[in-house]
Amino acid sequence: MRRQTDRDELATYVLIPGAGGSAWAWHRVVPLLERRGHQVVAVDLPVSDPGAGYEEYVHAVLVAMGEPRHEVALVAISLGGSIAPIVAERTSVNRMVLVNAGVPRPGESAGQWLAEQNQARAEHYRRLGLELPPVFDPMEAFYHDVPQQVIAEGMALGLPEPRFDTLFSQPWPLRAWPRVPTRFLHGRDDRVIPLEFQRRIVRERLGLEVEELPGGHLLPLSQPEELVKRIEGS
Image (cartoon, rainbow, N blue to C red; front, top):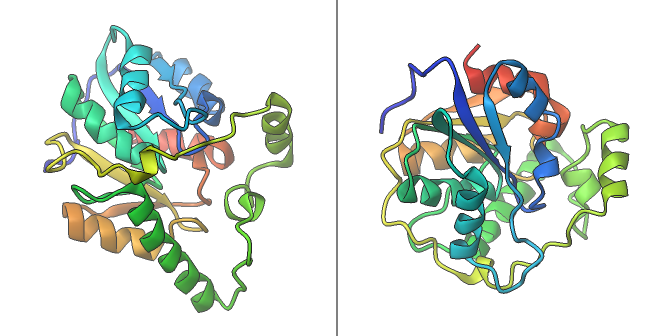
């Protein structure tokens, strides 16, 4: 697998959200990329449909992408990291940038991946001397470093209620990672997918190294400027 080193001056950025499923997750990133002259497509995923599986998720990305004007760069966060490689197998993609992303094995379900991730999360909390909340708290896990004003904006929008009945039970359909130049960015303060766990998984499964950024799991909301710099390689 080759790492991206050269790119056209302009790109069509296709931004894939995580389990929240809303293009709003990228709303602080979109204008920063557009100011640089890029075409930017932020995708809504069908997370509120319990019957939606990988085919429906990939279809949503391809429809949103339409006819790109430039070379395509897929940027995906968290759960979106399992969708982006399938998209790259279906259409022309020049590079991928995965942010705090899941890295499933061929045939592994998202539910199996989540169980492994949760175990790593519990071990991470123990090493830090922190108490893992008995009930998963999205505010504590996802939004701990997101500005309060941004959190309030999201709550006011009434974001979709995710249902993964089908998606989490399906095996990841690819036999191997696509031969597309790929980078992994990860927040050093991620409370959902611990950085040290991600480094090991990405190295073992893909032979790549993770690039560390400041911030937690929702970097597009908490660190948009730094994230865009890293995505652009500047």
